[in-house]
Structure formats: C-alpha cells, structure tokens
Length: 476
Image (cartoon, rainbow, N blue to C red):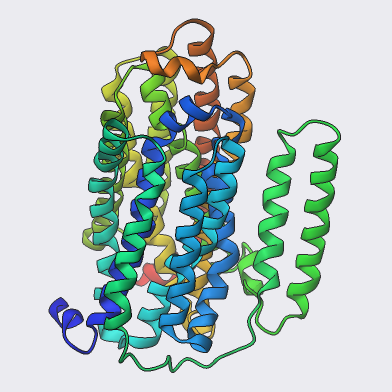
C-alpha cells in the first residue's frame, strides 16, 4: 500500500521527494503564468524564452552532478546545496531590473533545480525496494497535478496583491520551510548504498554550453553571432572528445543511435518535449495579448494541460492497444491539436478552441512520454545503474530547454515587426503590435508542430520496432 511510504522507515525520504518535486513544478507554473506581466515591466522580448531555456540548460548541466554527490556527501548536504542555489537564484531574479539579468538569475536557479530534478529519482533508485518504486514515482505525478492546480492561481494572486518579483521571492520562505522540515526528518537516513563512481562533471557543462550558444547565435547580430558560433563549436568538439574518453559518460553511446531502442526513445523524448515547450512558452502571452484574457484565465490553460498530461499517462495503463499504436496516436494527436491552435491564432478564432486544443495536446503528450519511458524500462537491464532512466530524464530536461530557446529565436522574426509589450497593460493589443504578436506566437507554435511531427516519425519508424516485435505474439 502507498501508506507504507509514509511510515517511519520511509517518511523522511518520501517528504523529500514530495517537497523537491513540488518546488520544481510549482516554480515552473508560477513563472510561466507571470511572464507576460514580467515582460510588460521589464521589456526584452528577445530574452523571453531564455527564462525557460537558460534555466533548463543549467539544470541539465547539474543533474548528473547532484546524482553523484548524494553518494559522496550524503543526502542532507546535497539537498542543502541544491536549495541554497535555488534560493540565491530566486533572489537574483526578483531583484533583476532588466530581462537579461532575470535570465542570469534563472541560470543560478537552474543550477539548484538540477538537484530538485535529480534527487527524487536517485532516492527512489537507491533507497526504495523495487516493489515500492512505482508507488513513489506515482507520488511525483500527483505533485505535478497539484502544482498545476495551485501554481497559476497563486501567481495571479501574487501579481494582483503585490508585484511580479514576489513570484520569485516566495521561493525563499518555501525553501527555508523545506529545509526545516527535511533536515530533522533525514537525520537518521543511512548513507546511500550506491557505489560511488567517477563523476562526469565536464560533459554536461560542455553540452549545455554548446547547445545554448548555438541557439543564441541565431538571434544575435554580427560580430557577436560569429563569436557565439565559435564558442558553441569549440564546446561541441570538446564534448565529443571528453565523452569518448570518460569511463562514465553523461549519456551512453546508444543514446546517440536512432537504430537502438534507447537512442530512439532519447531523441523522441527530446522532440516531444521541445514540441510541448515551444508551443507552451507564449501561450499565456498570446491569450492575454490577442484575446484579452486575464492572468488567472491565461494561467488556467497551463493547469488544463497538466491535468490532461497526467490523464494521458493513466490512459496508457488502461488501454489495450499495443505501445506501437499508442505512440503513433499520441504524437499525431499532439501534432493535430497544435495545428488547430495555430489556425485559431492566425484567424483569431474563438478562444475556447485554444483551451480545448491545448487540453487534447496535453493528453497526447502524456501518452507519448509514457511510451518513451516504457521503452527505457524495457532496456534498463542492458545498462548499469539506472542509466536508461537517467538518459530519458536528461532528454526531458534538454528538450524543454532547447525547445523554449529555439522557439524564442524563431518567434523574434514576428516580434520584430512592431510588438510593444508595454501595451499589455491595456488588455488585448491592436494594430501593428497585435499583428506582430500573432506572427511571433504562430512561428513558435509552428516550431512545436514540426517537433511533434518529427517525434511521430521516430515513434513510427524507430521507437516502435522493438515493441512491435514483442507485441506480435499477442496478435497472431
């Protein structure tokens, strides 16, 4: 029973999983809901997507670090480092007078958030018996839904009663409260029994630098773009050189091979998360600027997506269809609903169609991600120490970060046509600013649509091959 997770033996660990996952997902919903208001006050539309992209790349760089530190430092010291980094980044973001400096604060937040993302899964892998792990993972899903329900209304309330910096300031009392609860609860938790191996600290950092600078170069002017391309290329070459020689590379070699089940799941996960992140990044902004929806109503679409995402995961467990068909239909549903959102935005159709479409997109994404994770579980025995699951976790983080940053770069083509965020204070935009917002938002959602189509191709032609072979005896 799930109640055993709250017994004396596992209570401290279970609380750690709940609080870290809660802080992680709550921050995501708070920031996503508040960003149109932040943009109105700070400007800097060119950096809008980097509040998610840079944050995610920083998390990607530290996820392997925190997973390894738990075995060396112990859970309490590692937890303390993660929370302090997150709180410092939150304070820096709250004090930022410009969007560029807000992004810098988000990078610092992301370094700590890597621990929030890594530690729950490391705890489940190292401390919980196999028969209890699925229940512990289920708690993370519950927290995701609860954060989706609480986050947008809380952000709207903070913006109405205070000001946008409080979306970040609130993380300080939350972080302190988490430490006060968890430190006593974890006092008697024994050290992790996992074998301490040589950590690959440089690999994730080089990959994050290569990805981030290459994406930023697309929207930079001469000669800065040339310099950024140079840094990206140098980091990419150093990454390849380093990973080939490291005994424990951050990603196994099979992750780079589409012909391998793990590689197909890795690339498919990146693409579907990029589709989700690229389409989501401007959703509240578009609802406020095009249809004049308030902050609470615009944030509700994020809540709706989180609920249907979880519903998609439940649907997979209840469905009798083969994983092959579910993967194909999940990605197709995502692509189809993103097409409907794109069309509705372009013609300024009824806003309820956007809500309906995003809800159905969340359902398709939930189905697709569950199938990709199933593939990782199927091949887990082929890789040591939970490498397969860790690879998919990194793929989710990378896809979210790169998708937001790439969509941001593409959308600037539209926003450069005369978008003026200061007009958001008056409600729905009009004239040149409205047309620029529609074009920029459409380009971002078009990018998400392209990623969803590519993810369908992976599910259809690559990911499903092994699952298809195993499913065939059920349908002679």
